[in-house]
Length: 209
Ligand SMILES: N[C@@H](CCC(=O)N[C@@H](CS)C(=O)NCC(=O)O)C(=O)O
Image (cartoon, rainbow, N blue to C red; front, top):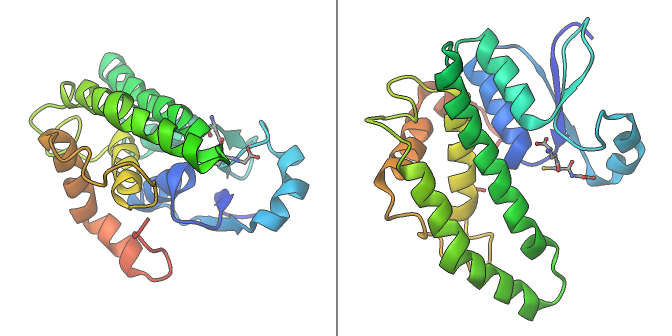
């Protein structure tokens, strides 16, 4: 292996997509390894924590945990604040995104449609608006989370909003965060970023989900 490799499932979503976007925005030539679900059971035990994404750089141990990967890329390529305290604010919001994924999970795995509906409606009425309000009050003048420059935290906020807006989550209104203008502005600024546009213009990497 002569170049960095990002391993994730074959879908333009979630934790893996955040890392792909970070690598692309950073201008890193990387191998975009996309696993089929059928291949995962055989690969899972060889990953650090039995999960994806995993980032492998020649000469170094594989790095797992999305936020660790993003902060590593961000620090090395100017996509994460240099000031420790500012960086900690970004990392707190990155952890907040992971909290949201954890909160969504029971509704993702619920088999009973009525139970799924109940969980989703509860998320839509309480958790998701509160989650967004907490982020909204941390965002400054923009257009990005920390100001004029795109950072890895913005990629997480973008991918998360894209997920909510995609319509893939039954019983969660696609416009549930429309009333949070700073959050929406972060989404729009990332979507309009030339490197993001270039990534999705390149082909099979649909931004529809
Ligand atoms: N805390 C981990 C969570 C990773 C995670 O749950 N990844 C999911 C895909 S988004 C996964 O690997 N699922 C398959 C499995 O757990 O077997 C991170 O942030 O990377």
